[in-house]
Length: 122
Image (cartoon, rainbow, N blue to C red; front, side, top):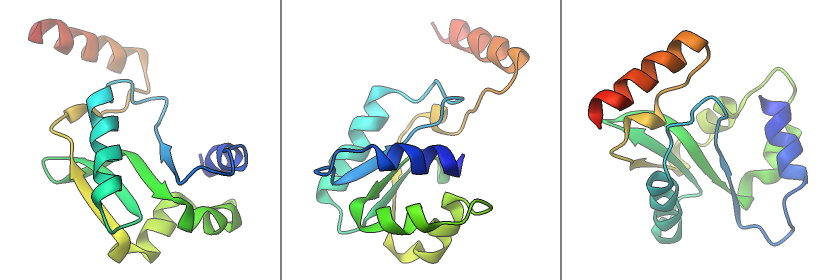
């Protein structure tokens, strides 16, 4: 996953203030969560924001330009978690109110289960 983040980072426009990491296997992250993170970033004195649900960290993660070079320099066996560990004091957790920030879907069965849950809520 780190190599994908590094590749995307290399292709960001030079004027980008930050990047947001969203995982492809977390399709239940909604626009409200993304907008909440963006608003929080504008108000926060911190440079790393992480979406949470009931106190548990999930995705997306928003990281300011301040850490771009450090991310690009991470060795292949490392991950963004290493960056987060090193800069724990610069993290702001943003409650999303949405369980989708924690749910990743890796199998057809998990997909079917989430579809079933969604139908029950409707």
